[in-house]
Image 1 (tube, helix red, strand yellow):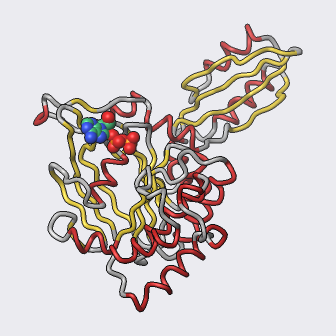
Image 2 (cartoon, rainbow, N blue to C red):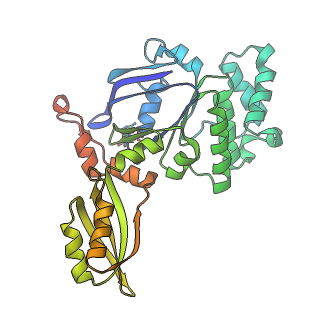
Image 3 (cartoon, protein in one colour):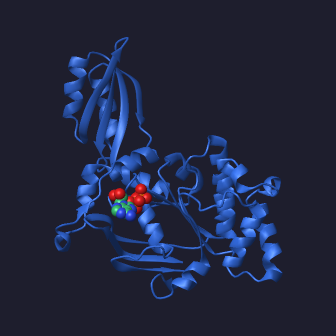
Length: 332
Ligand code: ADP
């Protein structure tokens, strides 16, 4: 439904989107995440035909964003970061206006209005002007306009930005429901939002896609540098050097010593499955006692830091030989 290949876009010397490729299909909610300035809005504007790429290609609902931009617009609902709403207009009047712009026949207009008002929970505010609405309700009106022509694809740029926690939860639930039938690509830099809403995560950093997959999949990729927490009753002076000698431990950090229990964060080489056994044996052989040994769980924040840290970006940086005057963005 969306197919993006090697999309590249610069603003003068700023390389905003650098050879971005991905695809997505109907029935998926895809979270497009990355630090501010990573290239999310630029990518979304290209997909919604508000900007043209310098190179690469993108098809949306089977239509090329340059060759068939009218067809792309018919198949996409777009909610920009600041929804373009007219504040002195009534909610229904505005939605009727958007329905006309979208060429919805008069015979079908009322039915579509009723549907989007219901989906977006606007029943209680249909008598009001948009200017009278809270930010959460304005955002719902923005969503309603993006859905008015019943597009199979929705592209939402930071749909919960600036909303309070309860408004945020409502919009997230809305997105989740809509995503059952449509393809929703939405950007955010709020990580819990992604965990709560998305089937798949598309992570962009400095203009490049650095990760693409389910949360579990991305966590398992990060797990290659696994971490353990271990707490041992004994003396730090003897425990630390012994642990350092164990095969498969790549890093060891002493956290603290409390009531005779020494605790560590340990990074292990995942190639070595026996490391927990070695730690246990070492404890027994040295006559210490094991207070705790557990695997540190990995969450989206760890995944995000792993894939968007400077080192990772360096590893994944695309060649820029043909763009010597162009620098990758870094606003983190
Ligand atoms: P995001 O949505 O991830 O925050 P953007 O796509 O808005 O990122 O921006 C990517 C980079 O392109 C940033 O460095 C931003 O400053 C730059 N940029 C975005 N829009 C413009 C513009 N109209 N002119 C110049 N630079 C821009």
